[in-house]
Length: 234
Image (cartoon, rainbow, N blue to C red):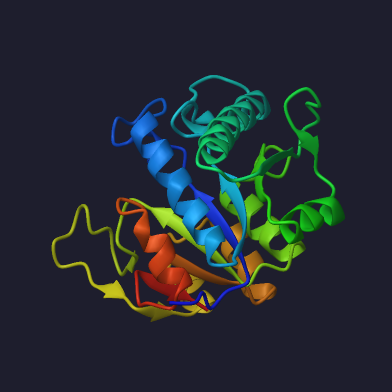
């Protein structure tokens, strides 16, 4: 089936790269994801990625540490994940560019919007590292910001649950999954799709979000081809 989107921003949590271990990187999981993204590009889709860093560091749970310092450490964790994902994609046959909001020229290009878009137009996977480059902002907010800046058709938010529910399905067996929900409802009902800053940014800039389970990476392909997977926030 042909893809229905031209340009996608894929948001991947750090934990999803750990393969269920909670910490570190699972090579099998990493390479499965790399091959899926390569196949997605084979459909003619331009792919940008924002990766979290929770498999290495969670600054908000660092007791007693200065929040700004903790967030800076979290940015470094996203850079490690970005480099690892870049390597897996290159091994799968894709061409990548890691682009960092924090200057680290030996490892990544500095973020320049027009250059990032040009990489996408040339068929390269662009991986955005270090969030927005600012403390107090999550990688969800970075995904919303970069998706808006590069004019992505949609954000694919890969999670460890099947979509958006009215309550946490891991705690409540009677939780109901939404097929579609509005940005306003996400904010009003505090549905936890993204933090409030990211959700409001998507709403205000009319950026849709597809929330789905990354346990089966092929869900990315199914979504790109228009199949009903997970929940659409629009």
